[in-house]
Amino acid sequence: MLQFPIWKIFLVIAVCVVGLAYAVPNLTGNDFAKNWPRWLPGKTVNLGLDLRGGSHLLLQVESDVVVSERLEAIQDDARRALRRAKIGYTNLTLTEDAVTLKLRREADRDQAREVLTAVDADTEVIFDDAAVRIGLRPETVTALKDRALMQSIEIVRRRIDETGTNEPNIQRQGANRIVVQLPGIDNPDRVKALLGKTAKLTFQLVDLNNSVNDALAGRVPPGSRLLPADADGAGPSHYLVRRRIMVSGDRLVDASSGFDQNNRPAVFIRFDQAGARQFGRTTQANVNRPFAIVLDGRVLSAPVINEPILGGTAQITGSFSVAEAQDLALLLRAGALPAPLRVIEERTVGPGLGLDSIAAGKLASIVGMVLVVAFMIVCYGRFGLMADIALFFNVVLILAALSLLQATLTLPGIAGIVLTMGMAVDANVLIFERIREEIRHGRSPFNAVETGYRRAITTIIDSNLTTLFAAVFLFSFGSGPVRGFAVTLAIGILTSMFTAVMVTRMMVVLWLRRRRPSSLTV
Image (tube, rainbow, N blue to C red; front, side, top):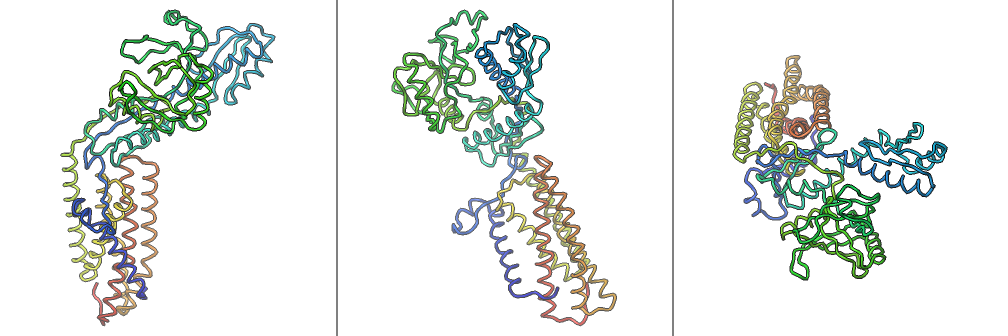
């Protein structure tokens, strides 16, 4: 244990110097760090919502909409499949969790079972005499809702990143909720507006064979939908469009805002290769027909196709301002949400409260460190002072690791740092107490130190590993502040192991080799 080769000395010194380089910007601030040479680290620890102030939103994903859309598609497919098979039916309706119909002839049951089962592999087809119920399997419903939640988290992240918000914290909570924390944002109205829009863009043909007035009276023909118009009052209030989606917004690769030939705000979109082919075929086959541009169930406009559009680009105009056009382009670039989001909780944390928390955290850290330093010096003298120097580098390495990882520091994270200050000297306490025992048993200073380190190392590793496992589980199963506490706790355990086993031992070994004392007082 007292063999400390020169390369280990240089390694320990190098780690401590690098840690100092990464930690110093947190103590001097970004302005001072900007004047550093570029090859020096300049990153600082990101402050969380409770320290920096900002907005907290709790969103709920209306995942039942995804199930309803899947059932609508099954309803349309079942209608076409029965018609192709020439099987008579009535009352084809969509309920909350299934598609129901009634066969005209019970003799068609076997054929209908074969046809309807082939419509969707994830459905259960149940017959009760002539009545038929087509429902999704429970595991399919669960998978659809879970996929909708994960997709929503990713799209929310893209939309917030597009606004330029720094260090947002976006994570799942429960089965259908998303927590969004936006440090530094004290007015979340625009963010809420962006997140509240599904931004599901589709291109659908207008139904010219049926009357809008009949549809308004409740007689919507099968295969069509009555949608309101998002207009300024100059055009019709509603459109009757075909249910079939000719081109989906999923095929977009870019969207930008600008102005059209009439100097009106517009959004210019570009499709991928497959979307461009679909758009080109559709416009080529439907010249002189109106083509509805539908966003979130509202018709933005329904221009007439004057000629085939084969370039894979399109233009969206409507009754929106320049800012609205920019936001629409942002939403289309980020992608459509699979289901609507509803804000169920909102709160704003002022920066003053964050400053108070930082001040309280600093005070707790300073008091904790002073007490630990004083205790170690009083109890262990010179060796305690060495442990205190290692404690200083332990805090430095924690700040360096948080800066390097660009982790977010929260108030519970500060609590984790304060806790690791006590844990950092715990390993040294075990070693020093073991050395005391060996001295009482009459061993020489070198022998006592070597035996103390050798016999204490197993206990140190066991105790720190159990705490590290706890931190890992807290991070895995916790959320929000709990994860912030777990991060600083885990980093503190690793750095304290390094400082206790390497930094303190290096100082003890170098002192013993230089002084070669005949007796030892610990």
